[in-house]
Length: 166
Image (tube, rainbow, N blue to C red; front, side, top):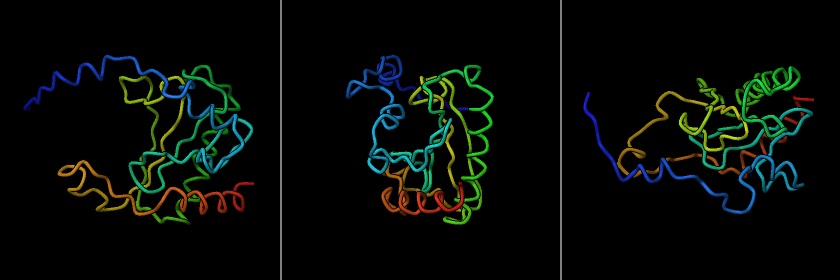
């Protein structure tokens, strides 16, 4: 295996990330505010929230998080665990109807070293996938092509969830 050394990245990796607007947790901030559209909140329930990823890996990329600010799995109550898993299952059904993906990546990054951009608030990523959805654009131009606007996806998803997830 070849190694590509990039010592200039150490400053980014090792540096603490200060909050940019006084509140480091966009999930908690969104839950406190009432404008779900501006905060990309597609659904709120008793124990979890569904948020569109502002920087999606793919069209339909969602985040599912407990409403409470918790960063460790053992802190979740049984009710939170069950509702999060049920929500993920229902979201799969909704995305199947809306976007017709051919597969999904579903995952949880625990800690900044594992890729968690918000390590203090647990959140599961649900990423729809299609055969051939990877291409040369990210490699050659550092650009990811997303076929649908977040605003358009928010409207479709909120309508779908209101009808199907009561």
